[in-house]
Length: 194
Length: 194
Image 1 (cartoon, rainbow over the protein chains, first blue to last red):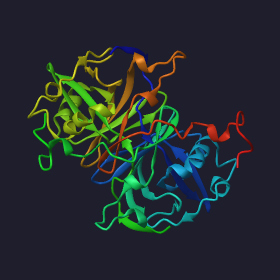
Image 2 (cartoon, rainbow over the protein chains, first blue to last red):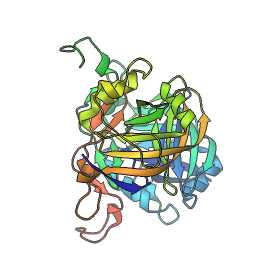
Image 3 (cartoon, rainbow over the protein chains, first blue to last red):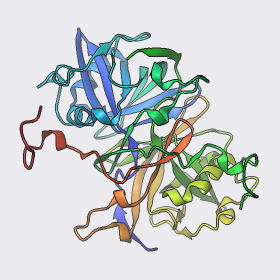
Image 4 (cartoon, chains in turn red, blue):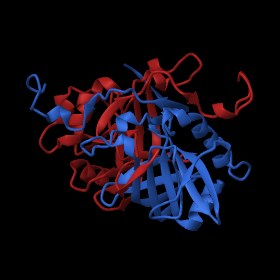
């Protein structure tokens, strides 16, 4: 295998593709983010990078609160639209007939049609360049009850989540390749780990 | 649909699953990270969160350089192992017979068996809690030449990349759900956008 050299660019793939909701002065906006990630386990923290010219940038900077909604593949048209059109020009919640549910810990609603919501409280904003990074603590999680199995395990594999890879949205295959730690589990293995 | 409320946790899914290489005093280590994300487009920047007790934490903090390698699904056993075993106890490069290629801009090698590599230079480290976030600029990208089509487009959809979702590794489906901006494209659409 031989590689070609390219200048530095945003080539980390795949990344999450999520809908971020916020509320200011009674108006709820939603936008799509892929420059988002988990950055800490304890406390649970995420980062979301937003262009300063976006309406949601102003809103979230002002309120310090937002909700990350994880959409299933049925919502991919809304997911795309909310990334290319501004809440200044169109009410995206209304356009896609999305149902809002009030936040529990924060004053930003979640989207009922998304199976998972993370309520986030901003702790810091770092200006980086085209994007400013919002660092936030995840203060509350809400999960669609039908995704929780009899053992209390959340079946994300049934949520039909979406990721973003180099300009395209992809669903995940239904069957996992393995579970965290499987490569060192001796129980049930057919032989020695190579 | 009704939701259950859970305390805040790292529930953002799916996220990337990558192999991160670094070199210090001639020794090359590799570890698996999922708490990683794109945080800026211009300049291209990423964040990688690492537990301070990890060997790679020491190495990358000392050198300020690392490479993010994007593995295909064939490498998933190595991907898992490199997340649960330390370079202090086992030479993971040797164990999985991985081939190293020297960095172009930095002194950290990439893994030849991974189709994409991002060479990164650390600009800041933020201690957050269980993890410290390394903020870095992507100074060089290397892509397997067979992934570049006749139009110079990188075919990530042919790279068989992997993501991580709630404790399991998943491949992506082969056919995208849509392309960035497709929801507002009028050309070739069968009618008005609903």
